[in-house]
Image (cartoon, rainbow, N blue to C red; front, side):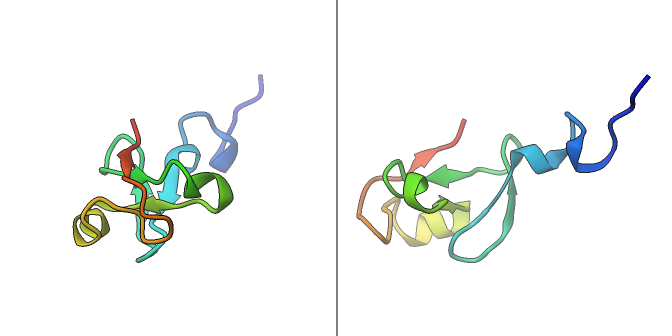
Length: 71
């Protein structure tokens, strides 16, 4: 029987962890409120924390699109 340990384990938070593109805060999807830009997340991973979302008034600083929550 093979037991998965570390970052390859299915329940490991590394699978659902993103970094805020502005403050580089570690965000866990499902635990922390995470927002993304639908346009810029394809080019470069543009994810934002709740504090930066409020500071940016819900708009992407790169393209001006409305930020959406990651569900």
